[in-house]
Image 1 (cartoon, rainbow, N blue to C red):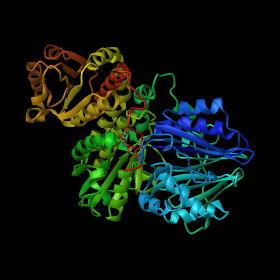
Image 2: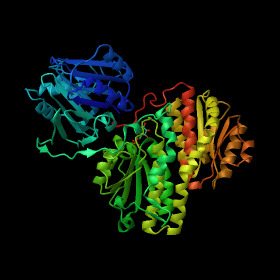
Image 3: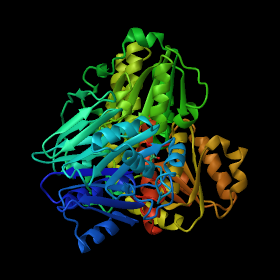
Length: 609
Ligand code: G6P
């Protein structure tokens, strides 16, 4: 969501912080700010509304000198995106500044108290922290932060500096991610690894309830009881280049085109067509345990939820276990039926989504075993689950998820085969055949890019409409939902996904010349039924657009536009069919001049409710 960078060392802090923030801008982007302690011991604060470039311009025009500072990119939660609401927030003296990700849940009560002594300048929950730290300050910043945090409920990752202590920063975390980067004669604090990869690969992951005092020479980490901890330094192996655009106009387009390789990465080392076996032993799921499982519950949000819906079809067919798929935000406020015979799978690209994380914590309490299907190692969810299966698709920067979706579905398919292998519902030969099919996916997805010019033409037409309906059935019902989500997120066209069989139960009332309908009509057991839907659409003068399997010439007569896709086994067709829908949303957005990588009001990872 928001991004944090802090620096202390010998270099110009502002340069490093602004560079780091530019790599985090995807986490939040309605305003940005920086505070640096100058050589004279004065704290200078700059904040700008809008994209980071506004702040960069300000600092370039009027440079900030100093070797210690903190910066932030914001995605508004409390208070509109204004200069006063932008971080860093300072206390009344202007000596203490704080950047914060997350939400202070009891900020209203704290504010009521603090307002008696201090003047508030913003609508944010974060400003409470600045005054609260000041209120607890008596010469030691670490102690002040430690005391202040005892009074705070909620999620936070914070970094604090004080003009009277120009040699260290204090950082703390609860529920929101925060890391320390270890350099030589310099150290860093950041909410996410890419921010500091240009400078160091040695990272300390802070855990909930930990507070760090970070100077140029060292980083001391303490727990809530004030005991000094010995923390492991992890080495980051991935490259900063993999987090950059690599010649594409947008991250999203790059990430769509990465899918042949990201799918191959997901498969690598896990599925052997030689011996017809899945190797997912590190999940820690045994045949004995699986025998005791009465049902699987999949929990996720957004695009990950739709990947979970596809997973349900796979698990029920291949492993013969009943599956529920739930939106984590709904699940956590019900009284769901979960016990030690329930296996819960949490799906989250970021591994940080607040609702999914909270739901996973909740089911653990209820005795369920949990598995994470995740992209980010070391993420909050990964630290809660019994076992994790990483989708290995590399950093996904475009806010609208693409490659993480296809890789997650591939992982769900492998997981289903693996469970089938463990509980004997599918034999080795069938598993082998399935693995062979899975391994054809990278080449098949590559071929989808041949029709990119045709997709552009359709996108240019679609850009003139205000509404759009997506229809799909069976494995491709979730793809209709995901296609609609991509279009609305990126182009702000009102789009709905529907199970094609439900068309007559409502959406048909909307269909006229102003409502284009996109049907997923690739080869399937329900192909004929989807064709009937298309006829009904055409009879009501709507523009009919279809995804079809190459060679399907008959369909040409029924629709206005066709996107022909390579043939693939029906179960795996969601992984191929979603690609043209991602491209369609991308090109409609481009045509409409929308912000492709950072659509309005959206955030890459929603770490607050
Ligand atoms: C946000 C993102 C979506 C993503 C969803 C769940 O809404 O914009 O792209 O699907 O969060 O994120 P997760 O990281 O849990 O998969």
